[in-house]
Image (cartoon, rainbow, N blue to C red; front, top):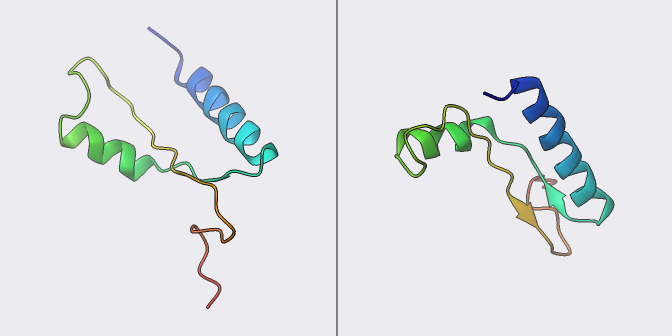
Length: 65
């Protein structure tokens, strides 16, 4: 068993590194939960987070009008 706090630290480190490399990203619990609901992952997975990434000239995660 792994500590859920360790998962949070690992996710934070991953998105921080991506951000340092100028890769737009977000942590999405709802997309991770959807992957569990759709049985995309094995049955022994209890918690999932999605981290979509974008490398483009416009940040797709913000709508600035």
